Length: 232
Image (cartoon, rainbow, N blue to C red; front, top):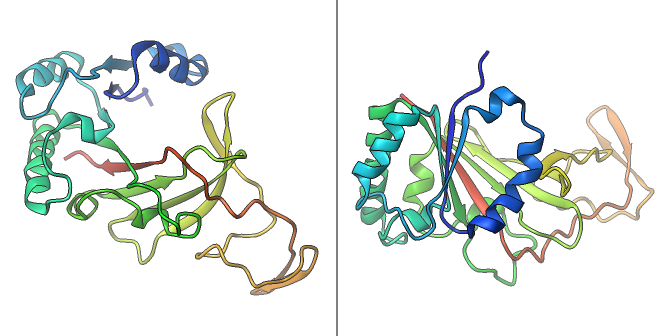
């Protein structure tokens, strides 16, 4: 299959910082992927409701399969805590999806840190109205920078019975997330029975050995949600 055409609109980092951030990832892309990947640094330039004609011109010219808005808050002036205001935004996004037959990936910051940040579900830390999370098909929440290479990951789909939670390893050299390869599955609430490291624990028919793992993953200072909404 051919690589999808991706248009990434970034409205937070300055151009030099953005290039440095993306370089490790782009160096790993094939030539075919590079020819179908487009980046537009729109910092302070583009607002969806104000510049819809300009955006539509670029979408018509580049014909992307996927449009990424990062971070979403910098592409609109609606009150993100107001469900009625956010519904205006989602109608605009729905129109883009329908008109250009594309999928959307929307990046959103978490709300400010709280005292329970280290144990609180990442999916509950989304800033703004829950109307946006109710509109999307898939929500992926990844912990931001930590004092080590491990991060919490949670994701939820529209038809899922409950969110899925994992621990991943962030590779700073490639900017890619990798499997953490822990010897056991992290419990849904990240709280294993209080047993000393080196003890054993029965999970179904399996017995696993408990080993020290970096489970206290608080201390993030920049974290994001990623929303995925499929095209029509």
